[in-house]
Length: 306
Image (cartoon, rainbow, N blue to C red; front, top):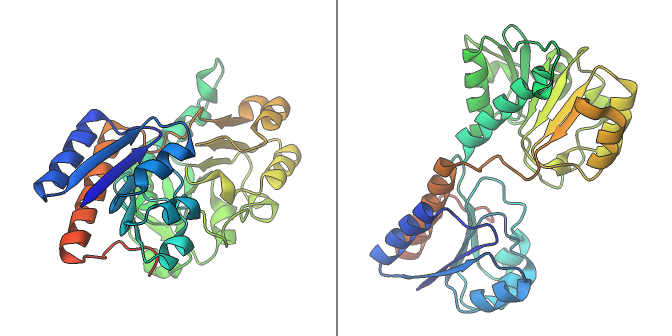
């Protein structure tokens, strides 16, 4: 069995060494395609692979069809909008992600971005503190829970919303659960977005919700840029001169936002959420273990295309 690791942005050497150890210990062969620059390279490399590990690399229909022996593809990370699930299903390829492995890295980034924006991007002038402010967490999965815990430790009040649960089901001694996004946005001095990019969520965060935010609120987006309605974001920032927006990955209209709103907006130069040594290693190891468990035992625990 051949396991291909195909990464435009490679794993750390520690992660690759660990992946190799897991794969070869299971009696399988590991192949690497790192720093590739053309899709043709990926299509050639995947042609005889039985399993595929990727990071943010796009596994399109063309890739799936080129991989004649492919049985499983694992996205080393939680977001999986780079996988064509329909094509995988048609070709009977199991698609998985590694939920939770990058969660702490993203959660710490979200808190760091809140502090960065609260302190005026570390420019001269008087900033504010997070203590006593209300943090709204939109989507309360692995990352949202960690963000809430970190914020509680900083003395923030935390309010959460998740579409699958009633507010009362999320309620704890330190967490307030609400039943709708509207309730959440009305009270959030800081709004941390963890909404996955799905067809129903693309462009779902726009003026109708953002206009509800309290005066001086700051939106922190460490999920996907696609969940924002970028035109409406620009409009609400123009109407509400008190609002701020920070994103892990620049929106398509970032240049316009910076020109119009200056330090009220910020975007990381490149997606930074999972860019820690620990997350890199955790996700890579998890992907390798899931492949071995599937090929050896038929374990489909993290299958996405059921």
